[in-house]
Length: 108
Image 1 (spheres, helix red, strand yellow):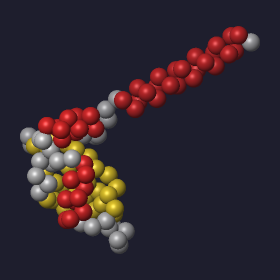
Image 2: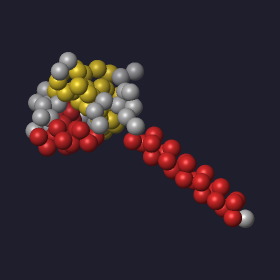
Image 3: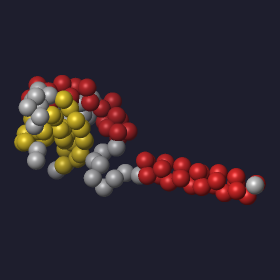
Image 4: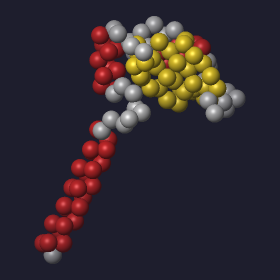
């Protein structure tokens, strides 16, 4: 009985370690980490998520589905997916420091 319980606990522990590792490993396509984005925002190098969301909605009304921060060509860019009232998804690219709209296109 002792060995069965020990084996079960070891299995749960291994699963927990795997899940924690997968959660904290950066994905290849994930852009900047939320922690780094928070630091950049606190330094004033990029707009906060709240401000960039307001800017995005001023360009395209709808529900924000996803926000991603990436560094492209030496500057930070927010990529924001918005679902409009007609159920169309739009991808907006905004300069992360100014909120200026760089590109807007309908997503497939």
